[in-house]
Structure formats: C-alpha cells, structure tokens
Image 1: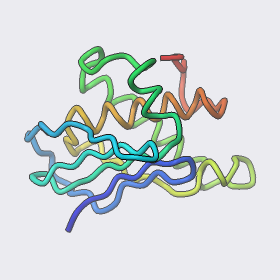
Image 2: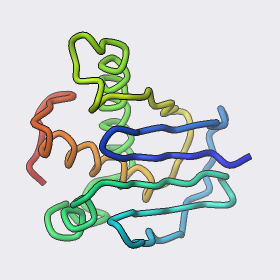
Image 3: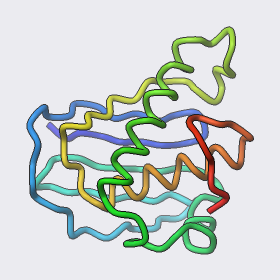
Length: 143
C-alpha cells in the first residue's frame, strides 16, 4: 500500500504512514508536471508527495531557501508544529476558513520521511502562510 501526501489549496493529506522510524533517505528528485504540480515518490518508504498549488513551483524555485539551507531536524520540528496547528484549525471550521483547512494531516514525527519530503512540506507551509495571510506557528519567514 502506498502512502500519500497531497498538498493543494484546500487539500493537505498524509495517509497510511508506518509507525516505525526508517533511516533510508530519499534520493528521488521532485518532478515538475504541467499545471504547477510537484511530485516526489520513494518506493522504498512507500510514499508519494503531490503538491498542487498555482504559483508554488515558481515560488519554490525563486524565493524559498535552497535545499540544504535548513537541517532535516529543523524542517521536521517546524513541520510538526505547523501540521499540529493545521489540524487544530481543521477541527474548528466555525473559526477558521474550511476552504483553507479542509482535511487533517497525519504527520508522524517518528517516521523519517527524508529531507526532500520535509523540505517540500515546510516550504509549502511557508508559502501557504504568506499567500493566505495565515500564521500557523511563530515567526513566518517571507522565504
């Protein structure tokens, strides 16, 4: 069974994650598809990340810090905080826009998703916060 991570304007999902930590790192590179879609897959860890967001690919290549700027530990810690707040907002549609926060994310901090997955999730969260004027946790960099 493949795990799925899908990020879009109104959809951000991680499905079917294993509960054991793996030390296998992804060597896959993101593939840019038409209609501004970024996809990364790792058959060894059985997951796939799909980010569908108009403008994100351009922002990722023109504005985001380059790969390697932040450590994987930094990205994992930030992603855990961002995802936790995201999930809180999904559960409060009367307070937070349900068109922005439609589905919860099952991001397990005990799973090693690898650098590339964490890099893409982190940068999507930064992009999302800046584009939609949201603040999920702490200081939101413009990069």
